[in-house]
Length: 474
Ligand SMILES: [Zn+2]
Image (tube, rainbow, N blue to C red; front, side, top):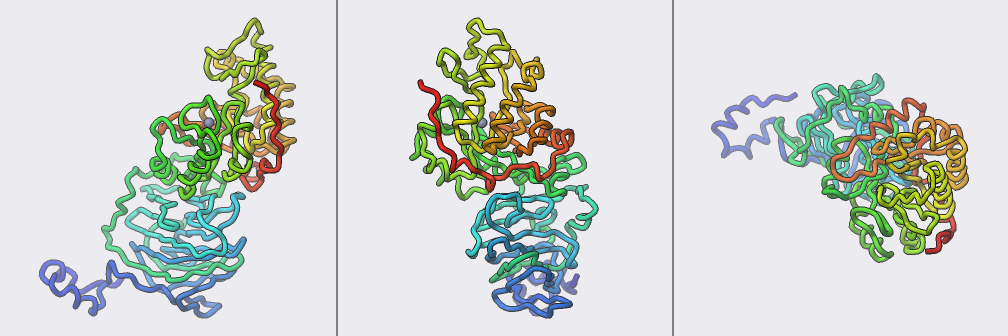
């Protein structure tokens, strides 16, 4: 670090001569400087207003930075990936990724690699987009087109696996590194910030990584996505945004389309488009839940097709007397002389019909049964019944949600689904802002041996090509 000989005098006596000090070799703060020259031992120099990076080379700026804001623009080619490293010697430090394209399980632009991986890109290949990276004390903020996508505060005891042991804040160089294809950067500017700089948006306490599960999955690059988050019970999109960045969980935010649910409901195509417009620039995956049993008649495939994914559940069934029964409400569970086992058969029959005829990507709240039957969950979910449901999932390539709120499906059922090659998502179905961090999902991964290859992504969706079958007349 360069030291300024008369910094103390400057602060105490020479306020009026601050302008003069910039010529004396003092560190200049709060002044943007172009970052337009990088060099590599093997490949020479890379300089200019626009810098194109290709796979296999790391370029260093050759300076030392502690707190800073770096701004610029980037443009990716299809399937291209590059990264910008900071506090680095070319190997150490943090890495911010640049990669766009479909939600297919690859890590997207703005990801703080292996610490806060992101799975939906905010921008498109082939287009210039703005980004910024700020380090203020222990806080790292990454923004894409002026929207924060990462706000990570390094805790006192960060958790790092051996491969990423040096991804820690200290000070160091800036580097550009190509991984594949071509990624271009332009107008890179860096502004040094003072040692006591703080991020005013960093308001939540840092996560305790000595016990946190999420960081352990992030460090394995295992996708941490909660596809089933509803803005209800006081959870606003701003709160969801802050929580998602703080916890390190990608949220898929979904309204309910149809009728009979709780919280915000979309009633027709017009409301679907209006809602989508509201959330399209938020850094979430964009889902929608088909609710009630009439949604396939109410909405066009085209309107629901704008969402990244669509899910439904079998918590609303049409019983044998033709009544819509929300089986999560005890007063709507009508046995009408049926034994519980016969009622169970009816639930399974309805589940098969729903998943066969309603084109959904994900079976949510799966294997849910009414509260009074749940103590005997394993008895009612016989092998034969489980197979009937898994047959449909397999046939229509529908993913099975692992739901931490209800702790369903059981690990036995998850193991059976994995054996068949059925893919999984994690999804909470929260009722308010106070919900967990996928604990049951992580337990399922560990107990059932799931890997990143077992996970479903919207790029696998076939729902837009599936026909809608109207099967319940009511
Ligand atoms: Zn839901």
